[in-house]
Image 1 (cartoon, rainbow, N blue to C red):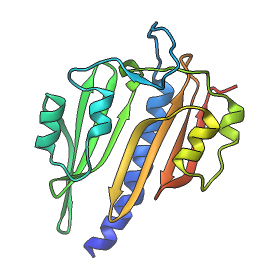
Image 2: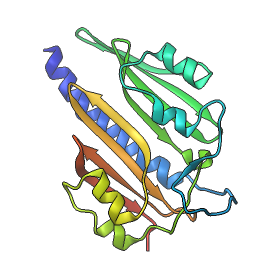
Image 3: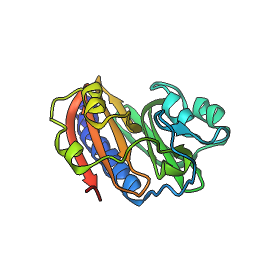
Length: 196
C-alpha cells in the first residue's frame, strides 16, 4: 500500500517540480551587466544560497546537511505522512532566488531552484526557437548541449524509487528560455518561453 502511494506521489512531485521550474524560468530575469565571455554559465555569488551549492547538493543528504551547506536554516513548508513514508518540504531563499528540497524519511529526494538568474552570469550566444525545435525526444543531455552550443542550468532533480528526473534550463540575457526534462537520462519533455 505504501509503495503504491509513493509511486502516485512520484508523478505529482515531478509535475510540481517541472511546473515550478517553468514558472521560475519565465518569471526570472537577468539584469546583470557583466561582460560576455567564451566560457559557459558562471556563478557570480559565493556566500549563502548559491547556484553552485544547489548543484552540489547530493540526493540522500539530510535537511541538517543542507542547512550547513547553505549556511541558513530552511523553512518547513509542508509535512505529511503516507503509511510509513514521511515527507517534508523545506525552502531556502536569497533575494529572488528560491530553492526547495523535499525529504522522505529524512533523506533528500528532490531539489528545485526558481528565479536563480540573479545567481549566475548567462554567457554565450542567444538560444533560438530553431535550436529548441531541433531537440528530439529521447536525446541525451550531451546531445542537447551539442544542439544548443552550451550547457544548461540545473533547475530541478528528483530521485524517488529508482526513477530519476532532471530538468535543465537554457536562457538568454533578455529573458527567452527553454526547459528540457530528462527522465532516466533522456529527453521526456520540453517547453519554451519567448524564443524567436
